[in-house]
Image 1 (cartoon, rainbow, N blue to C red):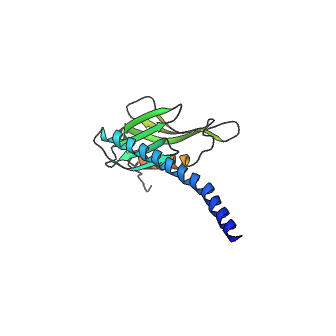
Image 2: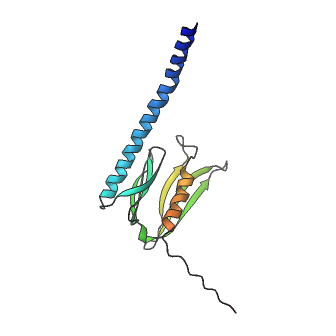
Length: 163
């Protein structure tokens, strides 16, 4: 009876944990490939990226070590983009959330207002569709990068007068 229970326990362990390990290994390989793509993209400008964030298995954002360039790559079925942006040309940044009828987020973008352009640059972080319908870390990452981009902006000076 003990041998039978032990064999059943081992079989249960193999059937449950081996697929989990295989899926995790596959996701790690995709993430490493995405990081390599980001590093190659930054190398075109002779830059290095040490700080970056990835989400899902197809999106990454990072900034060069000297904070001169912002790099964004998203390679999804219906949305392929590879963007490099001079941080010094960014006037303002903020997130944009569009909600659908059920009050859930249908689209999340990081909007970059540029100094020399009339149009804003829109970086899509999340778009609800048949494959992606639940938002995970995207909002937290987008807000983090808004603050990271705007932290180096010149601060307005506040003058206080006694009247």
